[in-house]
Structure formats: C-alpha cells, structure tokens
Image (spheres, rainbow, N blue to C red):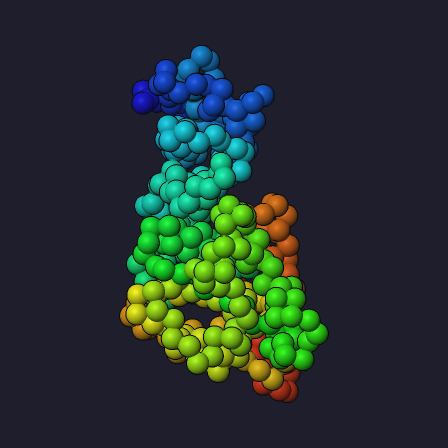
Length: 354
C-alpha cells in the first residue's frame, strides 16, 4: 500500500518521511472526509505533518509519530473497504486503540457487526466493548461493569436479539431492580404494567432500536420477550433464555445470589451495572461488588470492566465521568470515617478497573 522515503530536510531536526499511496479503489473524499474533516482529525491525533497530493499522502516527523500516522491511515482504509463511512470520532477511537499498544487491530473492532436493524448496524466502538462482546460469546455468565454511556446494556440487548434471531435461545428476559420503590411494587397504584414501566423503560428503548416496534407487543404476548422487575424472578428456573440484569449495582448480595441461581439449561446471563451509582441504603453492600469477590475465579464467568474511554455518548460524558471519579475519591475517606461503608468495600467505587 505504501512506499517509504527515509529522508529529512537538512534544516529540520532528525525525522522521517514516509509516502503512502492510497489504492485507486478508495475514493480520497471517503478517506479525507467532507471539507477534509477526517484529515484534520488525523492531524490532531498525531504529532506529524501530513501533506496530500492526489492519492499520495506524505508523512513527516518523528519516527514513532510517523509510524502511528501510517498505521492509522491503514486502519481507516480497511474500515472504508468494509463499506463504512468514517467520522472524526472514528479517528479518535483508532488513535486511542493504537496508542495502547494492543495487538488487536482497530479495524477488526470497528467492523465487527453484531446486529443490523432498521437501516443501521450495531457494532462495538472501543476495544473494551469488543472484549465485552467476545466474552458474551464465550462465557455463560458475563458481568459488564462501567460508567454510564459505555454501552453495557445496549450491547447486551443487541447480543440477546442476535441470539434470539439465530435461534440460539427461545426467549429474552430483561430485568432490573425497582430500587426506587424498594421492590415493593404491590403497594404502588395502577396495573402491573403501570407500576413497572418507569423502571424498565430504558430496556424497552433499547429493544425499540433493534426490533420492529410493531413486533415487540406480539413477542411479549407470546412470552418470547419478557421485561420484568427483579422481584418477579424469584422461584423460577430460566431455561433456553438470554437473561439480562441491568442496574445490578442496586441489588443486595441476597438478590444477586437469587438472580444468578435462576440460570437454567441452555441459558446465558449478562449482568450490567455501575458501582459508582449505588442507590441502596448506606448499610447495604451492593451485590455487584460482593459478587466480584465471590465468583472472580469461577470458570465460565467473566468480569468485563469498561472505563471512561469507552463512553460513546457526547465527548463531554467521558470527561464528566472522570471528574466525578476524582471528586468521589476525595469524598470517600472523610465521609466514611468511623463507620463501615459499602463504598470502601471495593476500589472500583472510585476507579473503573480494566
């Protein structure tokens, strides 16, 4: 794809020049972007000079940054070959993955199709998201733990719909603890649907993104899709199902044990939660924290930790998560002096672990 020219301007500091010839099958406007927005994003991501003439791109600068820029362009070309359009955010994600020195190619992450529905394709957008998706494929029970906006629930629902469509399971079960009502839904006014709808609405929203909205009521009537509060899982054995427990940080240790022991034959479980957003009474330890201590070494169980770099909402969300993490770390010790606290129970309370 490229030819190398290792010469530097005599008047400049020692550096490297590298010329890349883009194949004619790749439209340069696809690579450079409208008004060169992709080119500008690449320039912002590396400390190298980039000059474009026709289908030739010349890189110059320090050897490491030139090599990084070359790898970035190579990955972007690979993504274009799959038929995807590039966006400035794509460039940032590619650069971030390459700088982690991982052996996994960014193009392999960004082109992994999970589900295509209603004119759009759902894919992982970060390396940790791909590892999370891979874990769901290879383990019976997977925990996705991380801050808001990292795609924990959305990707889990996408994998559930994919498994249902591939006939790997016969039904999808989505559940959340209705912690705001103390799980005592019977004391709330209205029908069961009216009682649980506010707590389960985020799960419905994800389903509506992935399935024809007209088919969802039929699938729910048939029992193929069930959305219910965690309290309604007690006493059941769930066979041939893809089961998702969302907002698991708001389960007690007893509720988590109850839920995990519902697992039946041919079923898979994904548990998602954010241990920095626990709404339980202070004296109650989160079941999501406790379960990591109990099941961490158990075969066929995988814990996946997502971080602020995996946030795929507005760019500010990742910065907000980090800022709250720093603030939270300063509050834990003085706030808990002299008494035991669930917040001291896990270092994940103040920092996301990989």
